[in-house]
Length: 96
Length: 473
Image (tube, rainbow over all chains, first blue to last red):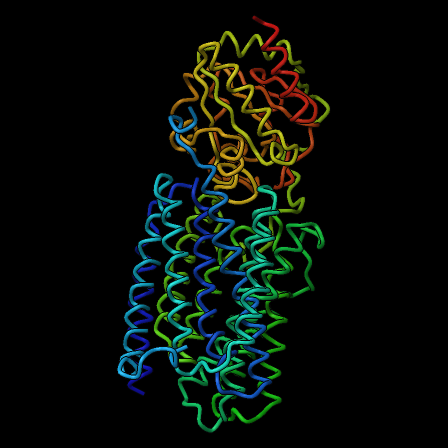
């Protein structure tokens, strides 16, 4: 039970940080921001690693394997595509 | 991999892993913060990806991880697919790409909860782990199917309009309540396989049924909301396996995603509730202003004439819409803008928050064509300037310049903030025909006496304009 309470504290505090992090984003960045935040949600990959490499049944390991594939697509694809978008944002001086 | 470390270090490994998780969290927070501004955004994304790399590497030292075959195979396959998709995707297809990545993320969280549940005997699961397993499966599965439906709608596999049974909202509400009850029942009798699988199936169905009725124009808001869901699903998965990094990062994304969703709704003048439960967008709802079609005439114009008007103007504002992207005309537009600047014309781009297919999409498309972002102006900035503008070029945009949003209370877009292009001395609309925009309504602007229509494919028209401008020398 203490675990749950402790975790809830973390969850709620982190949510407040998340609310505060996004405030005056110019519309220019809405798309990359959504895509970048989405890549971070692939953090579930860490949980997938523990299940696929852990001491469970082969059945559980296969589920973990599928989870790794899914989460890695999310992480690698998400960060790369965000970088591709942001690479193109240049100030005028940089062009010349 | 902890067995490779010296014996004396073994007792410290779990704490060191936690400390690195703390560092990774810092990278995520600073990364998202830096994504708020164009000049720091790229480094922000890189910091976040480094944080992710750090988190993954230290996790491999976790003593619970004893075999690596599945891990290596999974990471290699996933990374190849993700990298390939990210390299190949067209910038115009960005909304559906984000939807797909997001779907995989949500699906992964559901799988993590399922995997943890299936490797540990149910009677050893604590209540908190059971509740969060149920929630993780519920939210992760909704995100998974919902995102793929969103992808299908944006990509045209599924009709963009409203697809719904009569009473669809009530059905969805009922399903959601049943799903939450199932989460509760599952917590009390985790050994019951039927409960577990009913929950899983129902969650997948809810994702399908809630996104199917939503019109194509509202899809960006839905993707943003699903992005928030996938964060929450990751956080719930963190509760299940007792991992702080998952709980924190998931909560960060969940909260940030909600705020972003809200910002998008404001920009589109939509309420989240209306997006989710009432349909408009992608569908010909209203017929306001259609009746008196016959009396209305438009003035047509051609490349040479547009070239002269622009070349002798002091100030030209260009307002692009999604039609520009469909015609792949960004580069032709950039050429026109450069030619005008060479002639000493002050050229600015006015970007409506929802120009393109999702907020900020048009900025990405113009950035791809090397338009510097300090030449792009948000709606509020550019609206103060139209009165002093000589010519406005409206390219492939319709609803976002429709004065009905201000003047006709009966119109479905009434109240939506628009670009006040009609304040300029002259507007020129580049468009294929007089057809309607997303909202399915006519546009008074086209018939105004200050307006001229330049009919044709946006790319061809802009190329003609560019060569006409060159001939002026």
